[in-house]
Amino acid sequence: MSHVTVGRWGKNLALRVPLEIAKATGLGEGEKVEMEVKDGDILIRRPAAHSRADAIKAAEEIIAERAKSKFRMSRAEILEMLHEGRRK
Image (cartoon, rainbow, N blue to C red):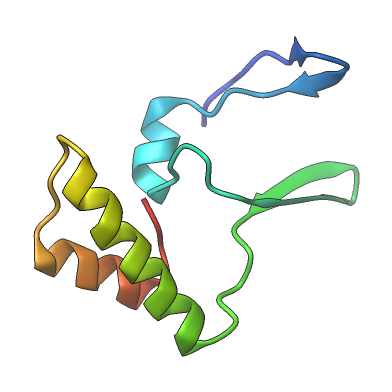
């Protein structure tokens, strides 16, 4: 379990996601997540994949970003992320 401190980002409050949690979940910068209150706790999760077309679009974005980035993922890593419904 990680502990974080609530900070301020403009007029909003902000939480930083510790690197070990980001790595463990495959969470990447700019990724959209859902946030809700459940029984007084904050629940953060990725939106559910809506369709195979969404997954294919995500894979195409990953491949396009791969070409521009110094960070290189193998085809197998991309296919694994697609299978798991994750984006990086």
